[in-house]
Amino acid sequence: MKIAVLPGDGIGPEVTAEAVKVLEALELPGLILFDGDVGGAAYKAHGHPLPPETLTLARECDAVLFGAVGDPDCDNLERHLRPEQAILGLRKELGLFANLRPAKVFAGLEHLSPLAPEKAAAIDMMFVRELNGDVYFGDKGTRQGKDGSREGWDMMSYTEKEVTRIAQVAFRTARAGNDKTRVTSVDKANVLETSQVWRDAVNAAAGAHPDIELDHMYVDNAAMQIISHPERFGVILTGNLFGDILSDLASAAVGSIGLLASASMGERQTAHGLFGLYEPIHGSAPDIAGQGKANPMATILSAAMMLRHSFGLNAEAERIEAAVAAALGDGIRGGDLGGSHGTEAIGQAVLERL
Image 1 (tube, rainbow, N blue to C red):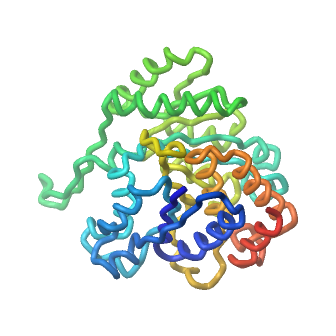
Image 2 (cartoon, rainbow, N blue to C red):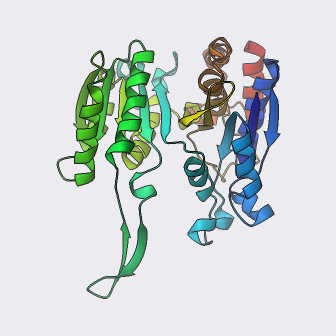
């Protein structure tokens, strides 16, 4: 079991360190952890946010545990050298096209959601977001407009093959979730040709999954429904741009972005299972970096997802998740949850309950 640990920038090293302690406490046979530079830290050390040696390390491992990237010192660099290009590069080079982002309120934290407690308690959804297409990877640039002013442009596109591939992931995820047998595909097919291709391809893929209920929703309506009727959602299937925005909206409804984990996977099989990259959905939070204030629970829960999806260690994943839930239930909370516990204290609390 070889895991590449890429802490990155800001609070990334702090929260990743606590997740590593949890993994080591499980005493998993054959576990080997390798450290690598990524993001702004990698640019400062190697001149590039994703050095060749880091990419090689990721390819040679069975999974990647990722912290966060983003460094204000690098904001004025050319775009291809900015820290954020590291995660985009890893997704592309490692073929990670499917992002899974669960959103669920932990018992006892309903009051932290901006929603009414009964609505917050009903949130239990899984976002399946396509990662390798859409405007993030389409052609882009700037040019002089007809009126002489500067104009920016970004191309949104999806092929039927790309949509079919991610749709299959969503249907399989819905079936595995038992109580999440509905897939809601989110698009903007009323105005975007890209979305019409998306909708047609999803409908075609659904034919092989008659046991899964499928419905479609425009993205603006989906944003409203996630807040007003969260109980109607199980698996939400959507593209790169819409998925990025809607999953962050759901994180606010849950109460804190510091509790949400994610998995990014493709089709590569290792000796242990499906290769994946696992990371908290929060950013590098440079304003609190190095102060021991960051909540490491999202990264710890990402490690649990890694054990489940890339190594088939469901029992161990459940142990971690139960330890996090127990710590929260006992009032162990960081500043993002209205508490005063620091990064190491939260990590230690999870270890004690493991």
